[in-house]
Length: 277
Ligand SMILES: Nc1ncnc2c1ncn2[C@@H]1O[C@H](COP(=O)(O)OP(=O)(O)OP(=O)(O)O)[C@@H](O)[C@H]1O
Image (cartoon, rainbow, N blue to C red; front, side, top):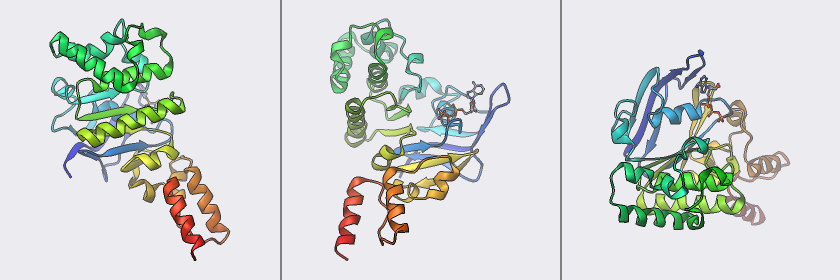
């Protein structure tokens, strides 16, 4: 598969001396069309890495290539290919009304007014936020702001979507809706989705691959059903394993010969296996 993000030997030193790095033995790579999640405890550097990838932070050291471009140097070319939802969405919602905010990228690109109207309405209806297009963003709820930020990130049909903890302030209905949209743009348009999350229960069934970061290194990379069953690695990274993984590890300790699932479907399948033996 064709890589769309390559981050090698990254080191960023903030002005107060705080250092975020990924050791030079492994690279962080996202392939086109992939659904990828970066996992790590608070303060591991996930947001810093995303910020480097989208060109907002110029790293002190390292090679970073995104869609064939160098983010720190070719930001203007890159931003047309990127959709971004920051961790603190208040920092990115800048339009006086929701409509203006979502339209921002298209207006910057000098798209015709009627086409902007079509695209904003299309993405607003996709996210179920048509009824708040006239509102002042400041007064929106956290979940509404999250959806507005996502609408702004999708309106120009990016090839790569970068989201920093996008689901954290969403109730279960909105969570499901946003997940559906991420899956849909990935399936339908092959958009690569890279996100950070602390929700290992959810990511187990969503991501094609996950990276686990800890103390300046990539501790593991692979499919969720390989990585999220490794209690030692997760513990080392300061992460709680998914509930199902804990439960099935406990069953094994009690003598049940059963594989460890990371999703409900897998759990059902493995449990049927026990019944039949
Ligand atoms: N502008 C800054 N100046 C100094 N230190 C910073 C700055 N931004 C981030 N840091 C530090 O860099 C480290 C990594 O922060 P970062 O936000 O990238 O972590 P994270 O993995 O995204 O954390 P979380 O899961 O809590 O969101 C932290 O120790 C943080 O305090």
